[in-house]
Length: 152
Figure: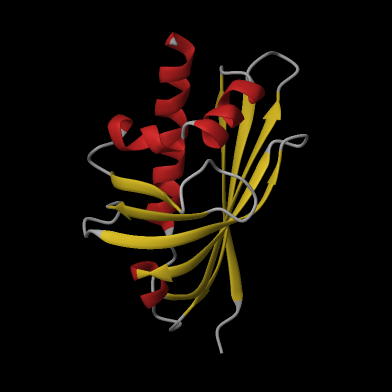
């Protein structure tokens, strides 16, 4: 049985923690328009917004191959500005027995924020790759979103 592994990425941004976190809570669906080459579709199953217990369905491409994922928001903490996502199904589970991602946005004393992405996964086979493409996309998305939010 494979062991749990982790990948982390940190991105310093100029956008406030409230505004950046608020985007994920209230406007996640607009990633389709902002990153059409990567995020093909996004839907909250059953409608509604992003909250603890929301189940989302993604069609995306971050590895060069179209993929899908059904993801539940395991927890959403507005005070600490963090969201925990757990993959329930989809193509990503062909490579990983489990896949979790955490977004944590921390206000910076100098203004702006520090965005932390933590991915925890268990490979289905020890020869399967680490999900570096997914983490790299989270960094790319965070930087692009920072640019967008600084203008709007």
